Every structure is written in structure tokens, then in C-alpha cells.
Image (cartoon, rainbow over all chains, first blue to last red; front, side, top):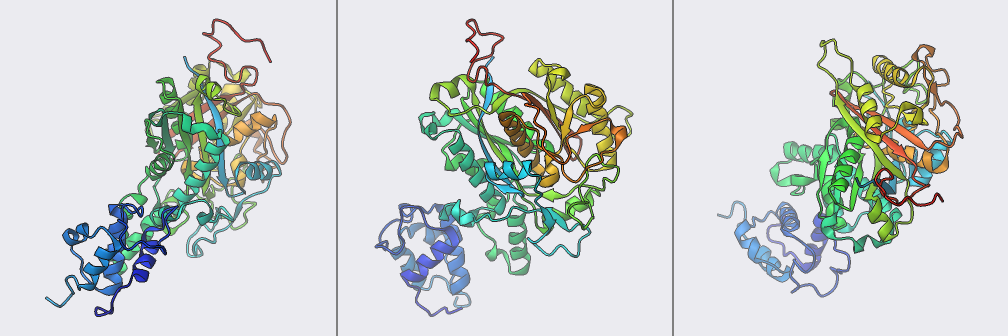
Length: 90
Length: 423
């Protein structure tokens, strides 16, 4: 649990693939930083699953309300790397 | 009344993956029963199963569906693809709301469910997959097939254990009669995990034999219980007129009759309901026992249940009055997939004019009065078949299938004003 580590786009795409798979016709290795998760083929349940993996791997707490607004990889990475609500930090 | 015909089959069975591989193995008498490998069953009294070999899910299921599907649903999705492909590629011309999905299920996706329960109790709730919310559910095969093929017509799931495959087809026919052009039906089941295993053992009906060739012996005096397998068949049912209109490449046969009954409560003194289901299905098809060329029996492999079924068959058809077969001796009982596979097998038998054999029962008990097709296929050119199934808990179901090659797409001959010339 490296609460101080920076989560990169590579980390995020790996977790997207592991938790929710990759939509046919979408290349997560392409220029996806500002593409909405919706356009990448991920519904709310897929995002719930991915967020779960992020929280487990990086020990970061990501409240549902804030996650809902992070609709692109860039926005979500910013939220994750801002530390969210670190366990034991509050 | 409209006629419901079968235009597509997709089979996944322990002795053959894909319709033709399964049919070839079945005619050759090749069994899929063997010691369980999916999990360590050595601590349980029953150690044999019919496992599907060589199924690589990633070859059949899109990446996005992999994390959210159980083994059972992945097999169902593959079989549905095959069945729909078999029915012809122009399904897109049919309206989304004119295509439904009605499948059979038993306990749902228990392997997925077991894994997530293990995650819950050993690691905590944050380790439970969000997909558990629906992936375990017994309607999940219907749902995933419906979503994948954009079939938004009337859909559902029937749970009558081993009778489910027939009940699903009976329900599919109801939708066809109400004006729905196409229903994807049948059933695929897979419960080869401890959570799926333990309740079956508790029934006391599972075989505890160690030799796959001596474990599941329906209608033998040595019957000692059944073996469980995984798989089943997805079956495309269509309105005959609609199938003709869209130019469906083939018609396997007509669902000519269907009936279901419940057994009376134990101790009531009334007879079991299987014979009544068969009689009602024949009446529904407007056929008599003389018109039936082969019976695909439920074949429980349990002495009392075999006796009850033999009484029903020989009572209806007379002693040794009709060829009877139990090809599921090569696959095991597939729970909700079992009767669907039997229906697919019966349709292939009608297509090729050959009755597949019952294996490992060379000497059926003579006092059952059954003409069991043993050892090798019988080339008797059957034109009609009765498929019987019983589900744990008192479910009985019967389906009458009939070749339609003399009028493949004709509407009901009883009401057709201008009959077509025989082909």
C-alpha cells in the first residue's frame, strides 16, 4: 500500500483492463487521457469495479460523490493523486 | 395457430464442444464422464463429473464481459452465438422487440458466487466484485444473451431443475403463439464447484462410483445414482411463417407438443406425474403413442425413479413398444442444461434419421419392459420424438418434436386453406 505513490495512466489502464475489460474498437494504449469513460465503453458498474481496485491497491479512499464527477482518465488520476481521503490521514 | 419451429442449435457438452463435435461423439458412444478436475473433490463422496474440455472463454467472450461473467454464462454466450449463427446471419432484419430470450437455470452462477463469498469472508467487503450484484443471478444467461444480441422482446428464466430446458421451450412457444417471431431458448448450466456440489450430494441421488463406465447406469438393475455434468444447448425457436419469410437456412423440426405436471405430495397415494405430462404433450401435438418413433428418457439412474419412468413409458407405449434412449449417459445430468441438450440431440436424430445410443447399459433390467437403444446407434429414420425430463422437487415435462421436411415452413396444416404439394 503505497499511499504516497503517483498513479499513472499506465497503472489506470491496467486496472481498467483487469477489472472491467476493454471494449472492442477501443485501444486503451492510445490517446485516451481526455476521452470520457462513457466513450471508452465503461458504465457506472464498471467504474465502481475499477474504483474498488484502485482503493485496494493504493489504499486511497475515493468517495462516490467525487468519483462520479471524474469522467475522464485525467480527472480520475487527478482525484486519486490528490490523495482523496487517505485512511488514517483524517 | 402458428407453428413454432427450431432453426438454430448451439451445443456445449462434456463429450463435444459445438453441435457437430457433440453429435459425432454421441453417435460414436464417446463419454465425457471422468474424475473431476475443476476442483479437488477427493474429500467428497462423489468424484466423477462431465466436464467440458477445451473451452477457452477468451476466444468466445468479449474482454468487457470477462470480468462480469461466470464460467456458466461464458459457455451460454458461446452456445448462443453458435445457435444464432446456425439460424442464419440476417437476424438483424428482425425488430429488436420481436426477439426474446427464455432460458432455463438451476442455482445460478454458483462458481462466481462462491468466489465472491470467499472474498467477502476472508478479505472483507471491499474485495467483493461489483459484478456479483448480477453475475450470480439465475436469470444472468438470459440477460447477457439478450444484451449481446439486442433482443429486447419478452424474456425470462425458468427454474425447474433438470426439466427446465423443456419448460423454457414450452414458454418460448407461448411467446411465438402470441406473435413474437423469434425466441432464443434452451439452457446451459455449470455448477462444478464445492457450492454446486454439496447440495447435489445432499439429495442422496448422486453416484459415488469411481469408475466412469459404471457410475451412471439408468434402467440397469445396477443403477446407483447419477453423475453431474456441465453444458447444455441454446435453441433458436421461430414462428414458421416468419422463418420462411426471412429465408432461414434450415428447420430442424417443429415443437409440436408440450406439457408439464407436478408430482403429488409424498404419501398422497396418487401416481407420479410423468406419464400425464407425456400424455398431455401428445394430446397437445394431436398425436397418439403410435406416432412417436423414439423416446429420449429422463434416465435418472436411481432405481425408484427409473422404475417410475419405465412404468410411465411402457404404460403409455406398451411393453417394448417404442425405442428408448438416454444419450446423457455420455454427458451426465446437466441440471438446467440437461433437457435442452436432450432436445437438441433429438432434433439431430430426426435430421439424420438415427437414434443415438445409451452407453454402459448393455443389459437393461428386463422387468422395465423398455426397448433401450444400447451400445450403437439405430438407423430407423425417426420422424417424431418424445423428450421426457424430471426436475428435483417433483417437476415433470414432456416435449414432442416432429420433422417438418414435407412442409418445412408451412403454417399449420390443420388450418391451411391451400395445402402445398409434398416436396
